[in-house]
Length: 339
Ligand code: NAI
Image (cartoon, rainbow, N blue to C red; front, top):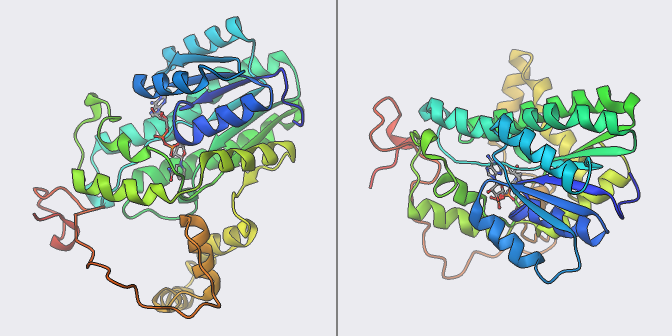
């Protein structure tokens, strides 16, 4: 897809962070945009943003894990603007804690949104998009987390890996219909995703095995403050869609980063390989790895600069980030938060 003007975009989780960035960039490219989002306050903020913009934007309250809500949103979109030319499956939630502390609620909630939401989006919209004709595109915000094991983000990493695999299947399957698919894999975005673990978590999935507190939330907010500007991310996705690229890595060294992220599997296949892998893991990061980490996390790194010890840095307090709830009795003490 190269021309966006006058076409229709439907964006899940479009009222905040990455999704709002897409809504801004694609509406500025002349698209009519439907924002589907679960949180009323985010929808209100997005309405406020677009209030005085020269843009055609429609807002729908949508829970991507609810299939009836999805079908109703698709009907409403068709009525208001028509069948989407561009569907962006972006809604996602995250929470951190040891894999072995995870509850069914942790899996059902995170998996239900990050993987189930993609399934529901595809099953709801793909038949309508095929019938409406070629030249359409599906975009999705996956995550760098899809490439690795997630010992403290297990439900999230698994859901994102599954979503990426599913999208690849659809990319191949939809080619004959003239429908493209692009999955973007950012690492750190400037967004409010950390709020998902508290005010964004539905009551019915309230039982978590992880330690989530004001302090862990503050720490996460700080990490996301240095993440990629959602508008910049949206430009990467737009370029990926224009180029019909399946995997959009929003970093200068993206192709090499993917190569390095996936090479571990070849070491996993033999005992010698595993030893070599352990040695690699124990070694200090290479200059290239440090550069890539900085790119992903959003800070600058100059390999030529002489490293200087940080000045006046208070020792980092252990606030229990990514630890288990204190009362879980099968978790090793080192992975459990103790006040
Ligand atoms: P965000 O929290 O700022 O925006 C996500 C939006 O999705 C929110 O407005 C939220 O209300 C909505 N949402 C949550 N559950 C929903 C549901 N069940 N149905 C409909 N909408 C729902 O977070 P962000 O970071 O912009 O997240 C967007 C996507 O980017 C997610 O898929 C996330 O996993 C992914 N991502 C985020 C990264 C980050 O560092 N923030 C890094 C990599 C990927």
